[in-house]
Image (cartoon, rainbow, N blue to C red):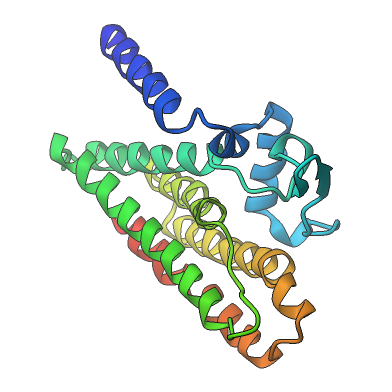
Length: 231
């Protein structure tokens, strides 16, 4: 196991250096331990967040940008979503081990199923933003941002699966799954409303269309959590 772990770690480092070593992608991994802890609390309990949900702008030589995650709790990162995704795959596989239903192919099934839903939600949010655009005003967000915002759901799904692994009462499992879906819905609505739609509001877009999109995004979290948690 030690040799296998070293091999996987080395491959992961090489993959990161090849595909995420650039300046643009490095932004999403510029995190600290304090940021990760505070972000996890924000994702798990978005109802308790008292501060602003807007990102902190920063003036640079090339123009205006946003502060990296280490300096802004509202900045999107890919470190936590990727760790949450892998935690989900491990939790789902562990649950099958406890039930005596595990097979090596199951790991690939959980990973591909989770990745497919992750991609589908990110694409859906991108399409929802484009639907608010007009010939004069363009509403969009970087795909990496959308991947980060939609990927935080894996943290909550993995936590819900952990309650099944620990054989908590059925009502406890339902409570954990329901809380995760509700927290994910609130987080997506708050994030989308305050950050992504700020450009649309500044150009006077129809508020009713915004509300419909937000409602759909919130409702989408419940079937997504149910599908991912159905191991």
